[in-house]
Image (cartoon, rainbow, N blue to C red):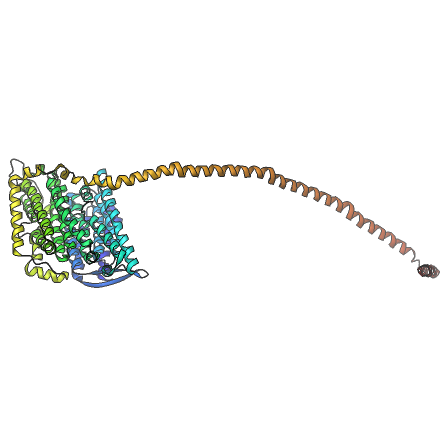
Amino acid sequence: MSAPLLLVLLPAAAGLALVLLGPRLDRSAPALAAAATAATLGVLLGTGRTPEIAYPFLRGLPWRLGTDGLSLVLGVTVCVVTLCVLLVAPSQVADRRGRLASFLLLFLSAVLLTLLSRDLLSLLVGWELMGAASYVLIAHEPGNRRAVDSATTALLTTRALDLGLYAAAGAALAGAATLGFDGLPGLSGWPLHLAALGVLAAALGKAAQLPVSFWLSRAMDGPSPVSALLHSAAMVAMGGYLLLRLAPLLAASGWADDAAAWTGALTAIALGVVALAQSDLKQLLAASTASQLGFVVLAAGVGGTAAGGVHLVAHASVKSLLFLLAGLWLHTVGTKDLDGLRAAAWRAPAVGVLAAVGLLSLAGLPPLALWGSKDAVLAAALEHSPLLYAAGLLAAGLSAAYAGKVLAVVLTRPTGPAPLDVPWTSWAPLVPLAAGAAALSLLALGATGRRFEELLGAPLPLVEPFGLLVSGALAATVLAAMWWRGEQVTAAMPAAARQWLHLESAGHAVAVRPVRALSYALAAFDDRVLDHAVMAAAASTGRLARTLAGADDRLLDHAVEGAAAGTVRTARASGRWDVEGVDGVVTAVAAATRRLGAQARRTQTGQLHQYYGQAAALLAAATLLLLLVR
């Protein structure tokens, strides 16, 4: 079996096995799933880059899978985060661990298929399976009706925009009779623009960019380990990955690249404001995820594939760490509200150190991960447009603000709460993520950055020392301001920001309510018009059937009965004629024949003179007849 196919099937087979085995392995399922993930990671690292392989599927439309630098780096990232999530999940999820572990593996398989795809056909399969698995994971708690509703909102919102990929596939077939990624930039005319629009819509929806960012807020109702994987390293990241992968298509359209760049910049700013206004830690992290993915979308729009890839990896490490810490605090402190988390870092020092590393990296403080990766994106934006650079710098300042807000809360000096008893098994698996949050800026800088360029096969923009100094000074200044005046800054945030800019309400007003009203109107039309027409037709058919039944009773049945009676009479007359006529004639002929025979026998006496007399009489009769005839 080839390596790309094995990478997809290994976690899928393990996940299906855990689904079939059911609750019997509920306690050990996370460990078994972690072993399967580790094996998948080993295969991925051992595989390295592989040439594209075509697997037969439909005639003329095979699946095309392969690993290059970008898919290899992101695949390793997703596997590492999944492994950490599975190791931590037992301490944060008490029920149905087997189900959680199995669907995490199935989700990993779908993400790897998405990363390895080299054509729209295999991409669509991975994309759809990823969405289906995400629904099950967000709605993990069966008794939590809100979680189920939130999973439905997330699925339907992204699913509606995913239709863009189908439109892109149709345009590609119409324009070039191919679904391969390499053929998409060569499209022209309306197929090119439709393909670019479809890819842009699907990717922006999955990356929770404006104006559909609200689905990510609802997805926070799922378990924290699910958020750590889906909403940091995998599901939302795949939206940014798709734009990085198909950046040549966006550029070829002449407009989609600018649309992506400005959508990403505006999302980074707007959702940064939303994050700053939140008092719920998971909601703050969700808004910051959409904001940070805005930098990746911006990088794709300006052609900074390598810069966007670095930021995806660094963000995955930082945000999965912070989501898992939020779940740990929720499990130990009993709240995710920031007011209830005051001094939480001091109550569990080991956890506090991990949180400080993650939050300082999220703020963009040098030399931590998001400082270098974010500056690589800003450098690419500056090469494209100074205005985009300014927007990105503003978004970077907001990142420092919302990270500093959380940092100021959890680092508040304790005034009385007892220390938290946090077992080392709950935080030790987070150390690799914290190490990544601290050191991954090297991927964008220096000799490590050059090797990363070679791996990705795409150049990193030159990050000027002055730009690094400006962003670092901005992060430090904003952090200091939030330490001293964070509560006043938060209080000054507009009320709309606390409600995610009312994006969900706007989505309902613009899309859901009109569709619902249309469905109601069509239902009423069906009830009043179509149903009435059907009932009228049914009534007419009933009347016609009754008329035909009456005609059958009065005419056809009467005719059939008359014909039957006539047949009986004819049969009886035939019987009488046969008995009285034919039989009588036959009997009379037979009687006459007997009499003639008797008379004939009377002449046979045996006396010679009587024979002579008969002969003489016969001769005389013949002579007389001859004379009469003549």
